[in-house]
Every structure is written in C-alpha cells, then in structure tokens.
Length: 203
Image (tube, rainbow, N blue to C red; front, side, top):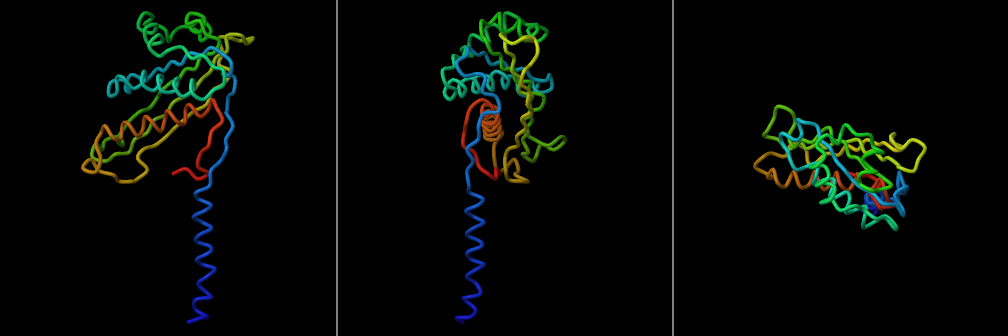
C-alpha cells in the first residue's frame, strides 16, 4: 500500500500543477494606447443582416465600449453616447463620410469605429442550439495625424458565447445568451485600449 501511494503522489502533484497553470492571469498592455489624454467618440455600425435581428445592438455596444474607455483610460474625455447617437440620427449618411470629417463634426481628437459584421445567437439554420458569435473590425482615426482620413489602428475581434457546446433552447433564454455575448464582446473590444488582466487560457 505504501508503494502504491508513493506512486500516486507525482500524479496528484502533476494534476495540481495543471490546475494552477490553467488559472494563471496575464497583465496585458493596450494594443493601442493613443486615447490617453484625448477627446474620443465611439461609433458602431452593423451589417444590415445584423440589424434585422438585433436593431439596437450597434448602439448598445458603442455605449458600453465608450463607458469602459472612460473608466479605464487615463485622462481621457469620452463624448456621451447620447450625443453620438443624436448626431448619427441627424446624419443618416454618416458612414459615407471620411473618418477625419466625422471626428471634426463631433469635435474629438480620436474616433473609434466598431464595424460589426457578424452578430448571431444560433448556428446558421439551427434555432434550437445556442452558439452565439460576435465579430467586428475595431478602427481608430487620429485627427491630428498626417492622414486623418485613414485608420491608424485596425484589429479584428471575434468572440463566442456560451462556452458550453450544445446548449439547447430549453437550457437558456435568448436574453441570457444575447446579454452574455454582448458583454463578452464589449470586454474584449475595450481591452484593446487599456492595460488589463485576463486569463492566460481563456475558455
């Protein structure tokens, strides 16, 4: 018995080490730190197919990313989401304007544009399974750069929710999945702009 127990010890220790490794956190710097000390506006657009199913998602995502930037970026001044949405309403063809022109009209030095090209709660053709995906290109324009009408930073962000495969409609509601997917996307998108802590091995 003693010999058997002694042989089991390395396996137990190894298992503990694996758990510890999987729970490790990383201190991650911003991908783009040019918002510090600047005036910023956050806008989001969405593909027509996305808006057909989730009419308010672009505005909600923009508002929440703006809030996280305001809370976590040093000396930043973020234009209120209400002001941004009002300007978009008054300027229905805003997506045809150059980034520098949009920033000047809004009176900001930095423009963050979230181009949401995918947002769904189910796999295509199967409404009985929850398999949410949100994908967007996150772009930044600098009014004071040598090319104010070109994006100086662009990065794709794609997230999935829920983490459990094969989760059925009787196990979660559309509201729960939509909320979880939006929150996860907002977190990942806003992380691009400030130092943060994240899991070394995300689920």
